[in-house]
Length: 143
View 1 (cartoon, rainbow, N blue to C red):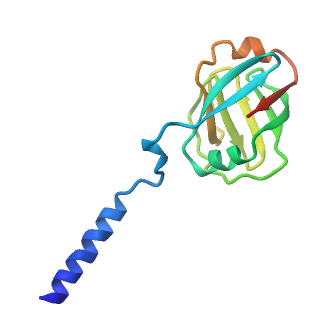
View 2 (cartoon, helix red, strand yellow):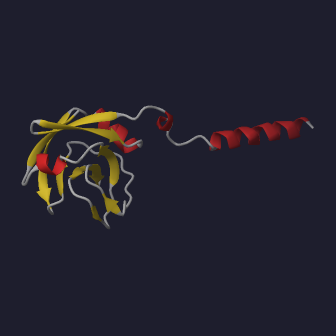
View 3 (cartoon, helix red, strand yellow):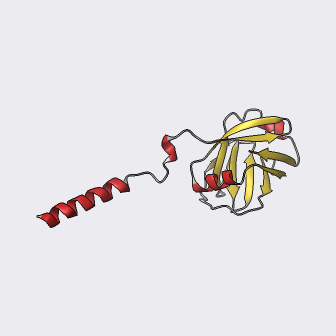
């Protein structure tokens, strides 16, 4: 009888811990970062994952972003980040993602994709991003 009760309690505890989400931040306030392009800034919400939290620990940074394909700017980080690459299906304007483990990509147009990225952050109000980011390469500051 004692063995049965002990086994029951162990299984009950296992089931309780099994239901705890991988991230405890889902119940907390989201973490915000500031992205400055020229004299304009945007507030972005960090994704709730290990990659985004590792990225936040590297801030503030200033990074030269290179134009690519008329829809994104990318820049190489000076450090590697953990990855959780998945194909998002559709890229949205204002997405800040990691390609591989060291390439930061800021998207200023929405489009469908077959590539895999790790989500880092999303600009909360990206309506003026295209205008601010301009054509060609640009230096951005993230803090």
